Amino acid sequence: MRADDRRLWMWAEALDLLQGGERWQHRVLACENLQSVPCWEPSVDLYENSDELRLLVALPGVDSRQIEVVLDEAGLVVRGRRPIPQALRRATIHRLEIPYGPFERWIALPPGNYRLHEQFLEDGCLVLVLRHLRDDHAI
Image (cartoon, rainbow, N blue to C red):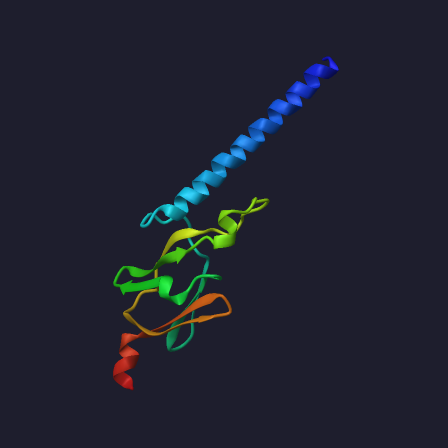
C-alpha cells in the first residue's frame, strides 16, 4: 500500500467515525424532543424490612415536578423526564453518558397490597416508601 492510500484510508475511517457520532447525537437530541416516548430507564434498588418496602430510583438532575409515580396491583411505574441542559444544546459534545429525555421504569413488587406512604428526593435518588395495607389497619 502506498503512503497516499494509507492517508485516504485513515481519512475515510475518520469520516465514518464522525458521521456515526453525528447520527448518535441526532438520535439523542431527537429523543429529547419526543414528549411521550421513554428513552431510558433509571436504576432501582428495592428492599424490604418488617413493615415497609423502600425503593431508591437513581434520578440525579431530575426535578421532582418532572416525576410521576403510579402504584397499582401490577406494580409501580416511575416516569418523567430529564431535560438536556441549555448549555449542552450549543456545546461540542466530547462525551455524553448521562441519559436525557423521557424515562419510564416499571418495577414488579413482592406479593401484597401496598400504598405509597412517602415520596421524596434525597442525594439524587427518588425515595419511595410503600407500606403494606394490612399495617394501616393495625395503627
